[in-house]
Length: 259
Image (tube, rainbow, N blue to C red):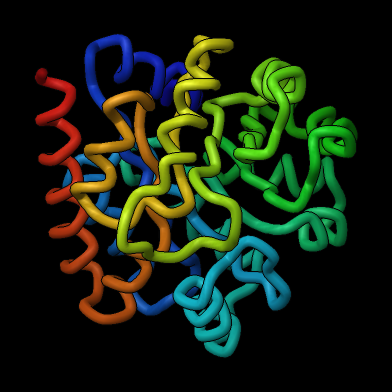
């Protein structure tokens, strides 16, 4: 399989708007939800490794993570399951640095690579402290996706874009993940600022809550990451509901790409 960035670049350069749903690992039906998302047109899937003290997750994903932990989900178990899951698209894990550090940086990076995981998002690991993890991840072929917050000055955005791998995660709004009634103006502005300084794919996440908002975001951004809206459907309707929702978002952003 192509690297995460090569795969996303190929889609973008062909005129495709990119869609990356988030699924909490360890939830009932999570593996089937990933397969359903892939079949419905996702370009990659972000898989959350549950942690008991998340800092960026809102109520829906927190509840999903707690449910997964109570069911016995562990980082090793989720990575092992990913090694057997052939979705046909890149898979990216999202977790917190405490789990990465406890596993050992090189050991964790090697385990992801061995499982065929294409990238990792560690939202509580700032750019200035990411060096040791990146030094472990780069040789393993695991793309470290960095987040760019709306409060970041232009100089910092340049450094984030230079260090990120796979794509730039443009944080659409300050605060935790969760569904919102409207797309924040900051989401489009972040995409615009990043697109002005990098050719790396720019995807907006946090606060992109439905198909309509995704279509708004990709008028400027290369794509979107959607978390709470996907996880809520998995909790309420199972993998089939995830597939139907991803197909809905896919149709909405395809319509933008065609114009």
